Image (cartoon, rainbow, N blue to C red; front, side):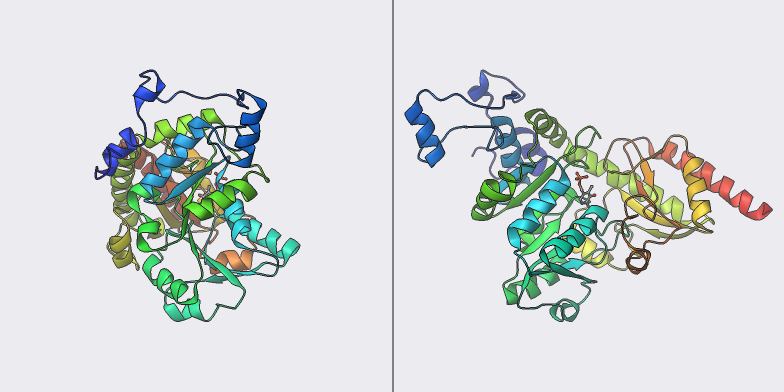
Length: 401
Ligand SMILES: *Cc1c(COP(=O)(O)O)cnc(C)c1O
């Protein structure tokens, strides 16, 4: 293809699309159709048999969705991609594709709340068990491996504690035992981190976040080897049915064009806010992978281009103090989700990770005072002014009480 060898900033815009194929339309058309007509009965038969290329029905494939799948595959440097109606549809399709009843999964300690819920469901219904692992050393992973271990599932940076896991270390152990490694790359985006190029087998995204970037779509994406993706397309996607709509695929294609520009700015703003948060007396701990004092900074430097747009921090005081801080913010919105143009803040213990039992949540490092900030694209001075005002208010009330 003509964009081969071009940089990501160029391929996000031009990659995989030729306007000549679409009457010169600069932006890809939205094929808003449920089904596709056949010229004759025999053609329908050939398409269903897989003897002839062509579209059949939009749950099986759609041209706008296909363009998105090709785009994400090229950004992640993988063979093929598949799009879903949510990040969780992608996570569940991948985990069900890789496991059977009585299998075992090894997971990073600290994962998305609903992924935790899904693992619990798989355990209750199909006896597919899981173990959480810090993944700081090879032996920590090795000692959990069993004959029935079907995959290693990693989130890095870890949600919401912002720990960083060394993907090359995980891959080394996994390869020795022939176990596939799945990475949830939502927090980094392919612009900051490309797990497949580090030897991982499958990468997935909640495209709702940075890939979309504008807080107006819920979607998921998966990239991996051609055979794996094709198998998923014909089973855990086609038959379970968590597909994306053509319009949402189009919005993601539009969002992806500005991914590098947005990630640069998210990371820049986050670094500024991180530095300021660190020095505020009401802030006990701040976790940001781009910080050179972060315990895994060397890993960040090795596998990520920048620190990204997410910061977690612990307030001094109690759960009440953390909640009061949220209520005192004006510009920054209280909302789950992340990666949007707007700066968002949430309280993991009572929001995204409320489903995780207290004991496990504390093991994951999610205390009652922990807050997760998704730094947006506003001027960092304005984001800080809002935070600073609320933190100062917390400080003066802690003195008076
Ligand atoms: C949001 C999120 C998900 C789930 O994605 P949805 O699009 O909300 O279904 C999975 N993993 C991570 C890390 C997330 O942030």
